[in-house]
Amino acid sequence: MWSKLSVDMKNLSVAKEPYDKEYEELGGRSLIAQYMIKNVPPTCDPLGNDNQLIICTSIFAGTKLTTAHRLSVGGKSPLTGGIKESNSGGFAAYQLAGHGIKLITVKDMPLSEGLWYLHIDSNGNASLEDADEYKEMNNYDFVDKMHEKYGDKIATISIGAGGERLYKSASIQISEFNSNHPSRAAARGGLGALMGSKKLKAVVIENPVERYEVEYKDKEKFEELVQSFNKLVAEGAKNDPFHNIGTISTIEVTANNGVLPVDNFSGKLFSEYKEVGAAKFMTNLATRGGRNKVSCQPGCVVQCSNCYNDKDGNYLTSGFEYETIAIMGPNCHISDLDVIAQMDRICDNLGVDTIETGNAVAMCMETGKINWGDAKAAISLLREMEEGTEFGRLMGDGCEAVGKKLGCERIPVVKHQSIPGYDPRNTKGTGITYSTSPMGADHTAGITMGRAFDDCGRSAQAYASNKLQVAMCFSDSMMCLFAFANAATNLPILGGLMAALYGGPADFNRVAMLGVKTLLTERAYNKIAGMKQEDDRLPEFFYKERSAATGSKFDIIDHEMEVLFDF
Amino acid sequence: MITVNNKIIIHHEGMTVEDAVLDAGEAVDSMTIIMVDKKIIQHDQIDEIIADNTNIKVLRILSGG
Image (cartoon, rainbow over all chains, first blue to last red; front, side, top):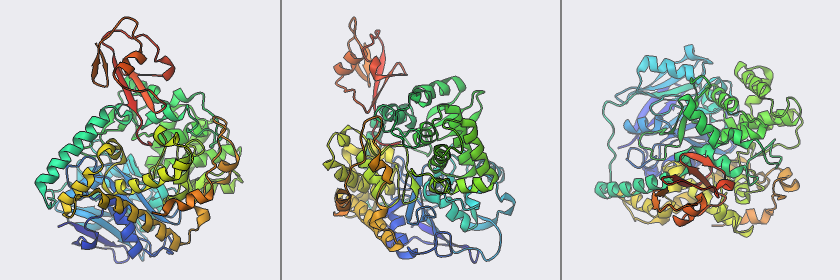
């Protein structure tokens, strides 16, 4: 039987209990939605006693389904003020599943000053340990210390100084499989600040002496279906640019169709895009001893991750992704891939979201605090965030905080969360997703970019966003969306997998309904939290300003978005 | 012999990247990235002539990165 850890920071205690029957068929995003609506008051202060930090594995954790070991982190978002689920690859979910732990909840706050980490030893015993000596230590150093203490096979979930200082852009960093670098991030929504408010520095998971064995309703059937599913994903991955290159390959598409954000979503094209594109990236990997086709978690066949070295061949960063490159590069008019990699490393180390930080830098450029494309000044701003200067702390609170302070009129946020690397005027279904997702502007909530949707005309955009938002809800409950995308030709298999694991009908409808229920629950949560229809809108400038690349405005009318959730 | 996404195509004199891709039943559109012998080429280079034993990959972006 799966278990859960209930961490009480007020009493500094940890209870290991059987996992709740009512959540048996849930995991990841769906579990967080149902847990939060019942246990976390929607009107609570995100950094107060009543909010909870929720860490969980997916529906198929502990099995051999490829990418089943995503880690989901949830809570009421300090950034958006709404429900938040942020998921990440890395080694932690695999190790938690190895101990038979499905869910960790962290509630209340300590009565005294201090800092702790949750330690799970090789026998699955959990305890809170004093972390005072690691106060304000950033992620790379902290993870090194934990490896010195507990050996190489641990997995870590940690915050840097960004989370401890309650930056609203603070991320939670997860160590990567094999490399152990804390370069995977549950980055969005400031959940690192929530973890920091609980005075929880990290969760450190030792390699289990004996791995937990999942109980199946029909193990033989499950294994047969897993084999088919994994084969499907592996076959798809062969021609997937994320496998062959990495997510940076997206630049090659977005740069030419006006989707790549340039100079704070100005709508211009970026003539130097090849300097931050896939060919340059591959050359740098090849000539500096870097690597692509890296699995961030055991058993992943997509292998979209990478290891990026500097000019001298020394490790600089890993998990170097399109979103970071688009927002910290062209959107800040920076065309030096090495500078962007350096910015990525600073963010991972400090524990802040690269999208939020990149957009905050763009606010400084838009208002003339620093010049467009001034890489040195951009790095200086990030160093201020590290040092915790007054302006650095403002930067830590993200794009909107900086934009408002500097008097910027074009602040690219939805629900206070900044917009990722797709200009919504040129992928309008994506703009609808940004607007209406309970998560705020989110690149994993349902991107519709691509001929199949973009060529269907305006009337299809809300439909496309609707379908993809539901799909992302169940994908985020089960696996990595890149595996999901490669298996999209045979999604009914997911119903079969559910049935073989838990019993019940081998029907895709149960999977689809899981997605619908999750999305509606999240929206209900936000409504009770005080969000209104006007929160489901893009900033005005996307409606008023035409994209210089295409002449397009965001012209989806309110009514089209309002019918989106009429399931 | 030309390989396009693991399919074998017979090479002929003057064959371009585009010819090989079409022969293999693949399509090039705004969501595809083309690699020729592990090097990424731009879409305006698909009329370049290829030598025998060239390996081509037509990679399709499936989801946002």
